[in-house]
Structure formats: C-alpha cells, structure tokens
Amino acid sequence: KSLKRRGLIKADALSVPSFAKVRCCAIEFHSSVIDAHCGLKTEDKDKDKDSTCSTNTCTICSFKHDDVVSYGQNFYKHDMIFPLWQYKWKRLSGDVTLAKINYDEGDDDDGDVMSTSSTSSISGEDEWSNIEFTNVGQCHAIVVWIDYGVRILQDKGSGSSEGESDRGKIGFKSISTGNKFNQQAVRMLPLPVTIEKDNIDSLR
Image 1 (cartoon, one colour):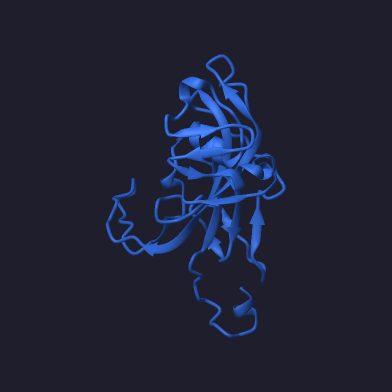
Image 2: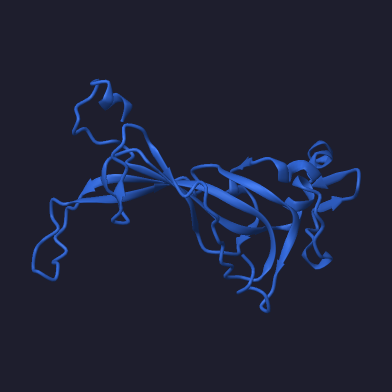
C-alpha cells in the first residue's frame, strides 16, 4: 500500500499475498520432547525408553541435552522455532485465528472488506481468542503458524443457484507455513494443563 501511495506501482496492482492469518492450535508433546526442552515431567507410562533425564542431566537417543535442559524452566517466556515434523506430538484442539493482516484492498476470503487505508491493517490483535479442545491429553504448548491468502482466478464453473458460472471470478488460495516444509513458532506453557473428558468443554 505504501508503494501505491508513493506512486511506485499502479493503483490497481494486487498484493501477493493479499492477507495473512496468524493461526494456532494446542498440542501435547511426547515425553522425550518435554524432558529435553522444558523439564516438565509426564507420567512414567509415557516415558521413552531412549530418554534418561534427571534434574541435572538428560540423554535422549544417546545425545546429551544438559545445556538445553538447564534453560528449560524459562522456555515458556519465549517463542521457540521448531520444525515440528521432526518431533513427536499430537493435536489437542482445532485451528484458531489469532489475527489477520490485510495487505490489499477489496473483499477477502471471509467476505469481509479489507482495509482501504494506505497502511496495512491488523484485526484481532487486541482481542482474546478461545481454543476449543477436541482431544484429551496434557497440553504442553501452543503452536503458531501463518496462512497466506493469495488471489486466484476461478478456472472452473461452479454453477451457482442463478445458473451463472464462477469462471473468471477472483477467489483465494491458502499457502500455509503449518506443514513439514516450514518451521513453526512454539510457546511452551509454564505448567502442562490436563485435558480430560470431564473438563474438555469448559477449558479455554
């Protein structure tokens, strides 16, 4: 938008991407990850036979993790960047949109009008977001990634109720960083939260 304002690009130029959604979900890490990265202890039945950790030392798959463990109690204060596909974890919730950054003008994929101001706008950044849990387990962390919305032309006629085709109309395709080809931001919780059948609907 600043490029348009300064006349460096045409007023009708489209931004790629048009918007970005900051997304997150709650997860449970395998005990080996928890032992190595934040020192939180899980039940013995979940212990990895290749993981041997105590207060001052930790060995996982024959690799010493002492230096990492020494900072473990402070990891919840900072975001960490993990290639999550390399770790053992399971999802405990659905995806939640924390904020939306609009780079372009016009309607977005939700049918909302994107900002027409000369600067990018961020929606939802000062609002509380609820995470609805869908699976029981120990919630150890929140994972954050970005979904980018890119404008595309509809190449197939969908046949609307009025009999019109959507061919040639503008749509959006999502390009996500929440996959094995990217790294994700992880914020550990100070202490794990137990999600059980009795409280799965009440925890937020």
